[in-house]
Length: 258
Image (cartoon, rainbow, N blue to C red):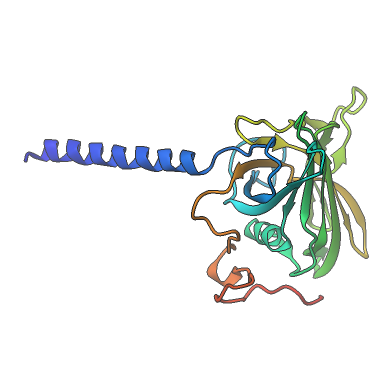
């Protein structure tokens, strides 16, 4: 076989493998059927915008996380609960020092008829590092996230508070030229995509900040076949997150106070 024919053969084989992988991914990750009220495990991915681009949409996506869906008796209100362990794992994978066991479930409440996110609420504690001139320290910060697709929201240009980069939450209006609007997008049944907009209130001893929440852009899908209900992840092996039934290292337990 000539060298050129050998290369052509390898390219064809590689193309077939890629097509097979894409076909399998499409077959095992169908968009969430919001009209199906059956209680079940599903999956969610979060869009992970760069810290300096909070308004960028549909760019980089996290690994799938487990979530549980149920509905009210009339089937109109659907609740999606992302377990504590999963949301803490997601936050740590983005570099946030989530304090182990301090977070609530991340609860999304949707109207199955309209696709609107009525509320998406999360509470917990993180550890932040502050600087006051040459002095550097860390402290525990209480956070509360509230988002919806029924109201507009936005953020102001980057500023630093005690050395931390933040984007203040704001309400777009003709009088607020510095408020960069982020359009809320209700649940899309064709893709499972949704963009809820809202704020995160961060409260510490030294200050309280109302910031734009980066957690509202998500893709919901039916559970992929063969995938575990929880995913262990972190920024490194040493930052692995402990889950029930996981036998790996637990080097990132941030349960203590500063």
